[in-house]
Length: 499
Image 1 (tube, rainbow, N blue to C red):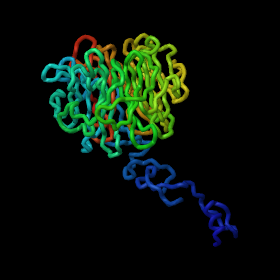
Image 2 (image 1 turned 180 degrees about the vertical axis):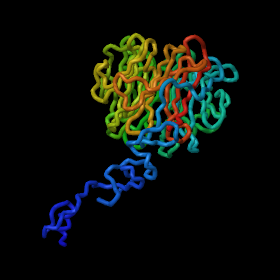
Image 3 (image 1 turned 45 degrees about the vertical axis):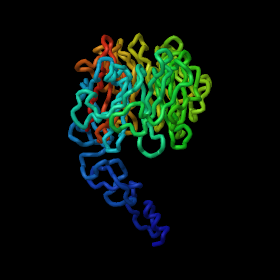
């Protein structure tokens, strides 16, 4: 048979001489299906007997596991191969709660998760800006703990801690972790916004190249950087990202002076450096910062917000990369301002919530709707007025203050979940809401975490992070302060033990 005749036969066309045509091949490309469930896992030659045209089987040795199987919670298997297993649902209670050492510590004012010592068990970093040293001086501290490695009732039992050395400096009010030299080991940056004399509170940033080693103090920092202006409170918020593609992160630090600014610097600053470039025009107030690639160009953009802008209406600015040179915020790449909400920008987060491959910007407005709070999701564009027409709009319950904190949680699959704090003015009615992907406008929370003891005000900060190496994130939230006392602060964890 000629090559042409053979090709005609493969395509199901009559061959010369009128021979019957073979059965047409319907599964090109083809995938091996070892368990016969109709889903393949590995590529096969076209038209291989027993092969199938569908791919996505995560266990090709088990016929009851495939993308169209029904998920069975608690059996230890990802039955439907969505990478998620069973998400939490209903009313949740903390599996673990850690408390601060002393009244007023404010444990949990800032949070971060990373594997500092490269032992495959990530550490949890907890800021306590009101921590008091052994001499009774309020300096602030940051604890480094492995919460799942053993019993830990209070963070005072933790062996690793970074202590402040100046009174009332608020060390640990903010933090950010990044790999600033490409060695795969994270470097820790800490904000101490009240550093300086009791009158000026200029602010200072500290850099620790190996933050997971023993008990230390800020006197042992590998670098620090000071504000160029008095009374600026540099370090109230931190953000970091690679804005020029050189593989090294740039650092952004907010101050909260009479006209707040976002100062920028290279992350490898030496002791005694001064910040120089800034984005100005943010108005008075405490800013929030976020660095993330919002426009898909491979570079990290910078987002800043001031919820107190225009008499607590709030404003959000997006600076497309590169942003280290600074400038006027009036020239930002995009600006979102409030239409009918209050405290727009009290919290910021970014993540792909709809699975389209692009990061979405998530903005909290906790005093919207008379204190019920709201969360908005927008695209990185020229900005505009934030109202109910935003891409996604989630509304809280009366007095919940939904949107006080936000975290995008990678739960598996193409899109991400959303964790949102609703601290309810520091009361016992505080909740943390978990929205399961895909998050759509008006969605109800799939699960709500509530306090079971003295953790009033849960939801002041939230974070999702894998603390035990099983690729399922733990849910982390804090109650550093409450409505009616001066607590040591509490940190609550819900273990991610699904499927």
